Length: 137
Image (cartoon, one colour):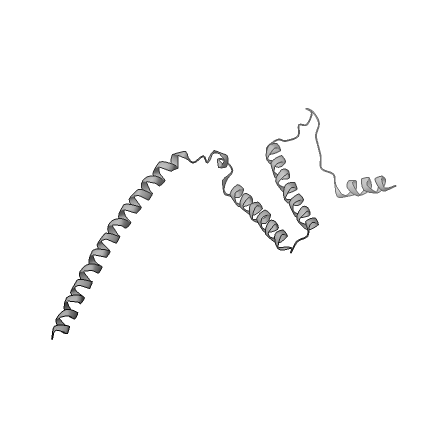
């Protein structure tokens, strides 16, 4: 009989402890969320996104791709999958791509000037083929 009373008291006490633990957990969780929200809101003005202005998602995609390729090349080089010549070629190709894109961006929107009074006509296929044969001779 006493064992039954002890088990019943133990079950009641366990429920009370679990309820109190849940209550404290929810209280701590809400406090942590509030603190995280305050920290996030206070740090947002300090983030400088000026470098991304005007470039848009295409820039972010290109940048991410280049970074992933470089990291992959380094990992494959460390593992011995790629030789030093292959890594050098890959990094040179990436550098050429990045520098080519930078040059293209600086000259974008600039059209070659044509002197006034001159009309530029596209070459017809006959003209271009005669010009090519003349150059070859």
